[in-house]
Image (tube, rainbow, N blue to C red):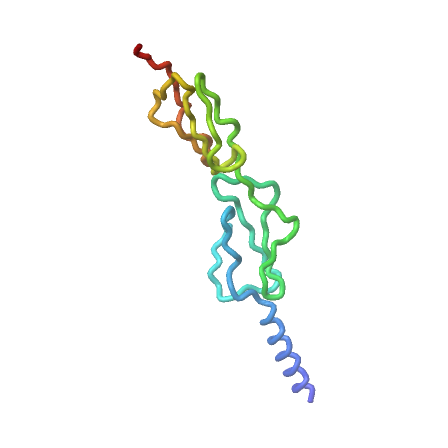
Length: 149
């Protein structure tokens, strides 16, 4: 009788603990990458997955997901990687720029330069992009056009 009781208890524990496992690896994320290889068939309840930011992103704190009752949940504090700032792209004499991609000077932003009326672009590249290591390309240059009368 005692053996039957232990068998039922073992069966119940096996059944319920299997339900608590996460059946897939932690979620893939656009701004973060997992710090370890996750190639097991399942992960026990309580398993924690730590992420680091991809190039071009920064974070304050740690990004962690935890397996809770079969579901990967973002663990507090709810930190996210943010686009890395590039700072101001730079003004040019006799010209200006427009922010054509994004709303701030952060990773992924793009600016296009143009010369004022009566000036022409000397540089081959008139676009700068905020990359993981700063602004691409040098500042473009504008010079006064020779007007024929």
